[in-house]
Image (cartoon, rainbow, N blue to C red; front, side):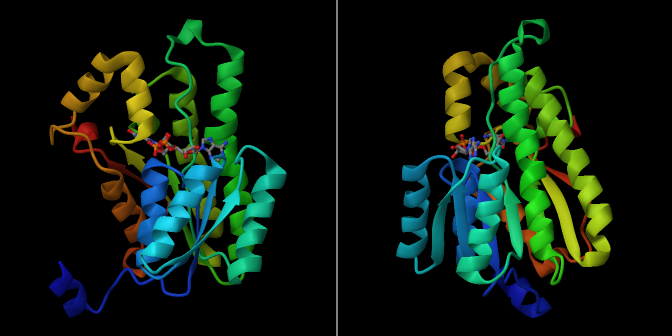
Length: 260
Ligand code: NAI
């Protein structure tokens, strides 16, 4: 792989770029923040969880990278605007973003879902991504950029509870509209659709319903959970110059789940 990258003259180089990652205190977002920093980006680590967010920054700095934590609730418009402004104030621009914060919500059948749970899941998972893109796109308007949103196999199938599935389908719609409206501004927008990935979210779901998680993992032809790094690698590629002709699509990172 290294030989091919060198021989082809391409790389994932993000030196001096500014990256925002939401949900970066844990799981997939924490790993993407670390991978962005490894590729040379200055990273804004955004999350509601202060302790986990600071730990991500510590890991990045210990590895020689640059990052800062910005406490952000992605469902709060003022907080999201302030997050994007903090990136511009601290590092001078916003060049790449991984809008990834999300929650699983209650695991109930369709007619047992509460309005409270619907509102909470849709506010964070869907409105949160819309708000992040709204302010990121403004910040990218002059110099372009790349955005990746975290959807799910639940954005492409019925694999999950109603509000989660609806929110993850909606993210793909937001991704397509933003990609088509901002292509001529040199902003690429894509989504990743992870299958079952070994993170605290899956640990929580397994604590409630271990059989269901086992069933989903069994439906992934590779026969195992994915790792946060395997999703982060796809996000880094989509944000890099190597993906310069890739926009407006949603990519399963799912061990083959959607192939069946
Ligand atoms: P996680 O629970 O480890 O990480 C999610 C992070 O989002 C946490 O740090 C949490 O504090 C943060 N967050 C939650 N609400 C927030 C808010 N209002 N504002 C800012 N941050 C907030 O879970 P994981 O697995 O890393 O999930 C990341 C994304 O990947 C989520 O959008 C999830 O839906 C998605 N995903 C995960 C899969 C998996 O199997 N782990 C499969 C498909 C999608």
